[in-house]
Length: 196
Image (cartoon, rainbow, N blue to C red; front, side, top):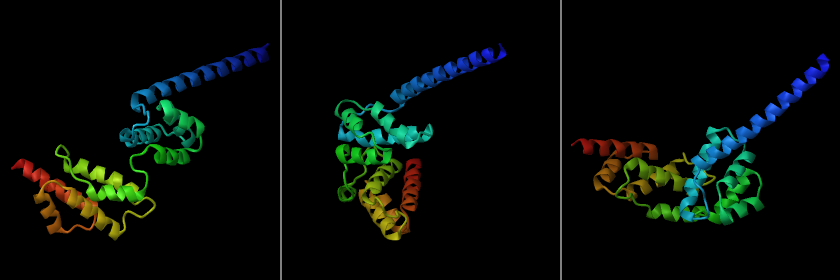
């Protein structure tokens, strides 16, 4: 009798566990839909979609195999079809998606865009620097970004892209050795000019 009750109790716990797991999956799916924008293949939206997926994966401690399911869930039309065909490990899928849908598909193209990058009238220094760094990741993929030669190039891209000559001159006078230092100099100068 006690053994039979124990088995029933075990079955009840198993059922409860499966129901909770199903609920957790449904809640997770709802969270994905609210946090990650739907992507249908528009190249201009690709980078933000990819960043949203990676942010969600990091915040929820998703494994790579689960991350590709998030990409599948947050995609529509041809992107969804593409992912369905390529349900491979996440890093491999991410590379395939980048080659197919990203605006910047190779490091040479990213480097070319970096050369022409300009600060938008509505952008502050921090936002411009972040946009530059995102492109730099593509342009210098597989290289050590802390190398002096790369930092020097990034500083030049940053200076050339700034819209205010006063910020450019301030950075050139101080001659920073890292992009981070150049951004800090520009931010400080920008904030001082706002106060005046």
